[in-house]
Image (cartoon, rainbow, N blue to C red; front, side, top):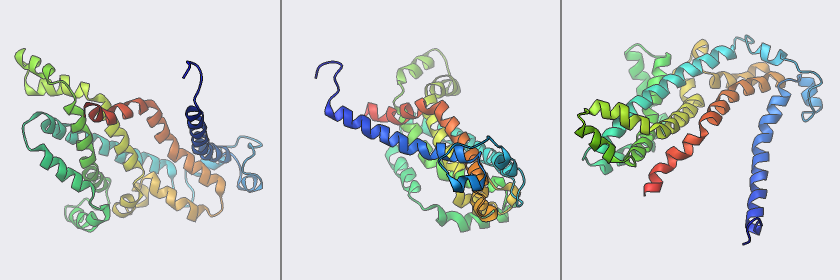
Length: 278
């Protein structure tokens, strides 16, 4: 194929990608546009631009029908942020051991893989009983512990695969120079594993942020519930107030998009590192 000319396959690929991009981006733009319009204006023509930019829908989310979406927003960041920190700390240490010490990693990784297949609802009753007995039932901590346990197998499998690709010569040189294990871990392994760590952090944050099932069961108190639970209540309380529903959707989605756009380049590097080495 001459340089500068596109093949039929390339043209078809671009058409498919453009179509996919439009169908993916359009619903989000549609929601943002309608979040500035009244319900009557949305029902009249949901595709038109707002006659005037109004923040009334967003102002209602502060306190309407005993729902404070902004408080739920803060609760979500407390829960998801804590889960991410705990998962990264525990999975990084476990992955370092699996990738560097001569142990039967195949059996251990099979154990983690099988743990990922366990349905989340099967642990609900035992966990609820345990948390009530130790006095943390209905608290943020109960949900943080549960989500951390559920995300650890995935995080350990991804990070251990990534750390396996790191050259061992760097550690051997550090050992010769007198470095101990902690120095190697914090000054060599962790800095080189940043793409994998960020990949895990993004996925864990998204799963925790969107976890409606566990959040509804473990946190029954409304002022402690994360935003995903409050969002599910908006339609029943707001009724046909589509403007407020659109505003609630926007403030729920925007943080996730911002985080992913800032860190997206690390995701592919982290997920493909193990595959490249084969």
